[in-house]
Image (cartoon, rainbow, N blue to C red; front, side, top):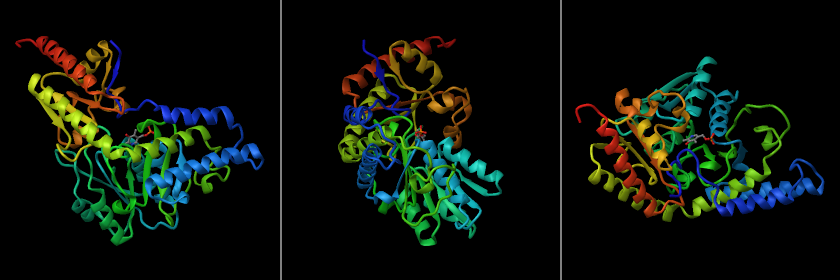
Length: 384
Ligand SMILES: *Cc1c(COP(=O)(O)O)cnc(C)c1O
């Protein structure tokens, strides 16, 4: 049996179009994009072409695209950079309890610098309301950071409605769109965001490459100091190969978002229907409708998610128990805890995330194996 991968929320395989584009650069482009000779300018041209591509995919201008080392760096640069810039007034930040650690811990770091942080609670489905954001605002609020869609439970936040409130008050708005891009259609204008984070490896692109959309006129302080690359906001020799890969991955992800969304929704619902009817004793985590199309986060009664993950691994099937970032340490997910789930329930959660290459027969094999694994694990419980 060939192995099956259902952990696209953790990372995705590089798609062939991206690989081909990267290989060309790898083989041909030797120069530093910062060098003025022909070799350097050839690399710089490739970077600028990727910047235009990314800008076009997002409906932005090329000057609004800043290349980074991934989603984590984009989030840190957005939050620390916006808060620390001397001309962005205010020492108060608003975020949510279900953000990725790269947002939550960046905010915690700012607390040590004297900023005040409001962490908004979520409801049982992992959702916040625009009213919650509005009520948290103070004259001292400099930045609001709310993720577009959650990486663990897939819940999609009301970004456009929040953006509208913040636009009226001239407060900076950052969204972590690392999971949302390529999964749900959106427009920067409709969302009303000033800063938006993207990571390439969640959209069939290379690891270690990302971008931050920085709306024209938004001021950031750099995190690092060095050469003047990326308008001084992200110094360091540009990762030409990775950037070219990101440009292609993002373009294709945005072009295909509607058909991919429909296909994943159908496949995910099929899988979920089979699990409910054939296995049972299972609950869905996250919002039932406002959720990412490729995400199925579920808890089986009386069975630990980690045990299911390890058993499926023996069948050559990769899923996630909790998020990859917290899987190493055995602590209940901060997302499920924020959704009001007690630790015992949080430990039962597992996340299945579909990808571009997932077919219906793959989903069916997963359902078959899950049925065997859950039946087996439940048979081990005394008194069952
Ligand atoms: C993966 C992820 C990140 C971190 O991105 P990296 O590129 O892995 O650093 C940030 N936010 C969300 C929502 C993610 O899923």
